[in-house]
Length: 591
Image 1 (tube, rainbow, N blue to C red):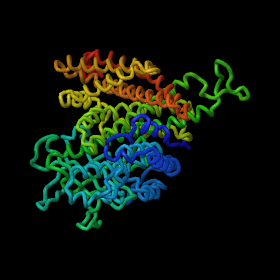
Image 2: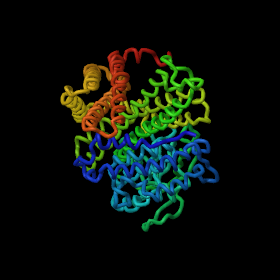
Image 3: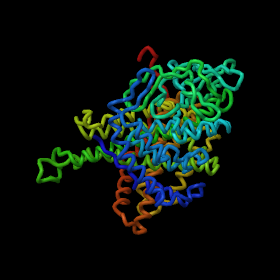
Image 4: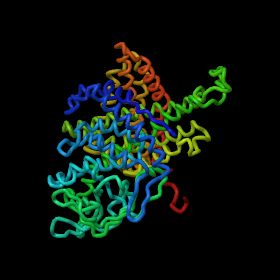
């Protein structure tokens, strides 16, 4: 059975050496001293390793069952969920007013990575509830907040998001689900939604669905979509659970992965619902949840990569196979361990350099969310809006790739279920698809986010990179990081210029290159993170850090990324500059 050890030391490095959170002026960050964050991360890591990871294989092999109208989760899930609730983990970064602990979103993200790495399918139950609670918090009336949030924060009631229908996925303007006003402030919601994660289960007393639907007579397309709170069980004014609402499970989807999460077809038959936010502005409210979910999905990609990588490293050190071409490293044994071979090292370094860079990128993004929400910083809000599709798309593409590469280290054993490596790949695969498939993330980045506010935020990003390079260009030990970062940033700017010069004449020239641009920007973001981590590591070594080996390892890993991964921006630029002609050359019938 695979194992997992929470990477708390690396998280502490990112939080305190890189981001220097306790020195930040973001409200609430003054409490985030190293001892405090260490205590939280160590306890969350213990839960991850001892409680959640052993249930990961159980969830994968058992899955969820649906019988006689009841959805049951795998053995051990319900007891584990009770322990998570009792420990207050479900409301770690939600407001104290509703029973949460009001910690920064950054801490919720760090803890979430560990929980997801140990058991992604399980962690989704509380993760989706968090997203639904955030939408109600942002768009609900005071009465709605008081009625729904306390028990959602505690996960006595869980939450979902209901967007997709059988005939429409990304194009939500095509949806058919209707919400008929009843004259008393309520609506009757009728329709079918599919792919609803945590749609129903036996771990909470109620499930609060957030459902997109159209009010008859509203505008056509996406402009006519509204968002509704539709509970599994009706709730009276005193918060008591009553009669079953007109909500039922059509079936549980059979999936490639995340078997421990109950992905349901949900049928709504004149179910009582309540408008959340403003009529016909449902997407505005839903995007509160979706943007949070997209960051969470990026985190899932990183988490699965980390868990798979850890097991691949263990196997590479234990498995004896072949001899080191420079001389035997295990002369008393029949062969040397796999890890002596350069190609295994390349594989593991690809994974390690991505994972550590992505962790820094994700936590930096979470810090921007805190700066935007807690600090009311509009520039931070604009920057994280720009980077959200990159976090979701790039990190899940590369995260899945890492799980496959980790599986490859095992050779044939990686393909055998006994070793458990296929689960990481199967669970990671969904992250590239849900909450907006990665192709849609790329289109969002190029089609909407680059030009937002007149291009202000992407220009601010370029200026950030330029300023860092200028400030640190002459620093000892930084040349190996600054020169590649400059080159990659120039490639990214050249790609943006190509879009500006050619996209207006033919939008396909921009859209055909959008996926490459998303990955190019992801590489530049990780390049920036690695350059900043290198500076932090060099400073720590200059100050006489007691754990010099940790910082030396960090520098060596960063040098690998800058030398072997960051040059990919040149390939992406070359693809982008070919435009759309070769992409669009064939008639549909020729495929």
